[in-house]
Image (cartoon, rainbow, N blue to C red; front, side):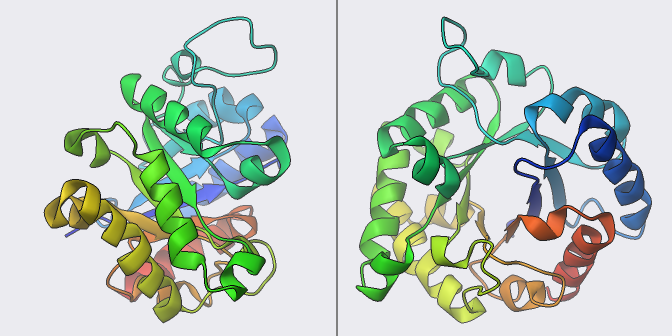
Length: 256
């Protein structure tokens, strides 16, 4: 059984004080959730990582960053390295569609960041997904499979099993128009696990956790969590309020 993982990507939201208040509200909202049943992760902005880490304390909430550079240090003004992150958090989001779309992130860059994250003991959450034009042209499987193949280039089977994937169809992110549960499940089964099986064999493909992301809310999470290939969610806007995010976690577990 793959343990579900539900992560909140706060994107460019929340001051340090707002982030701490969010955690103070989230901890009691999750009091009834069995930490053995699900991994809960929050990914605040870099500026709030230390404060959120302190606010989490011993609570069963993982902490992640939203991006990182692949070099451990150097003359890269404005960047954050895996060496810096490993002191603060356990997870890092890599290759989010907004990074690809707005900041020119490439498949090669995603691969380099993925290898660097693993080398420094961070658990990467690697995002893949097609845009609306690619979807409507029937290219979803080719695009998503290609992103997976490029991201995992040069990784051993042992390394691959330390990676979490997030299938985020770009046309569903922040639009209020999520994919259907069966639709997302089919893409994960064919384009993601199918590609992983080609690379590493079926056993490894079945061991890797794959989230869904894109307009996930408390009232639709059950549809995704009930699917056999979906192991959780990468949540954007609905993770910015404690009760909403806790509702996603509770409702998602109830669907299992």
